[in-house]
Length: 259
Image (tube, rainbow, N blue to C red; front, side, top):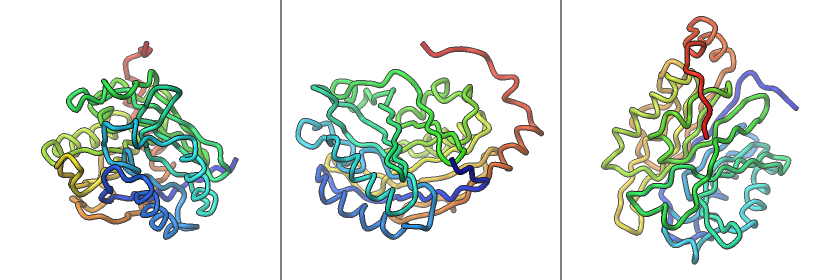
């Protein structure tokens, strides 16, 4: 498999059409097409086909969502990561999908369901962190509320990037900014967060603030970014190795296993 020293990553921050999967997929198809052959990885918001809805019995994706993502990943020659409400047997999960251009994919079911909104009553929680490999890079797949739980993201797997896709609302955006930066610094990895903008069907407002932080917590996207649009940044493997060699903080981390 190809190993790349530098990786172009594109963040799509946008409003979502409430509980209207086909319209959202059509909108994202246009945005994804604009990135064909231009980037290595595209990141979409949490529940990008519906917004953060508690009505999966009506709007959940099935296995056809894999084909949708595979088609764009193949045509664009990039990987895609985002989450959807997904029907898993007779139950539902908030499923992150990391789709590669060759059609191979890695799934991550959101571990920390958002109890404040009753997500735990509607969706089954995942039970383990998941690492996806691509072009010689290791990505820790996370979703929204997971950001508040640093132990779950602790870099015991020697990953390069931790990624959060989210519907994180305006009233708590200061926490989003602070915690995402902290995840980069404490894990000596890139930390990427892609949040939506606009207003959902419950009246909740979102202001984006999608961001990429490097190993030292430096912002790589102009802040604050609150409008809909696409930003592309370049990640560097040598940046990670340089500072992990110089600042050997990860060697002093606590040893533990998640159970």
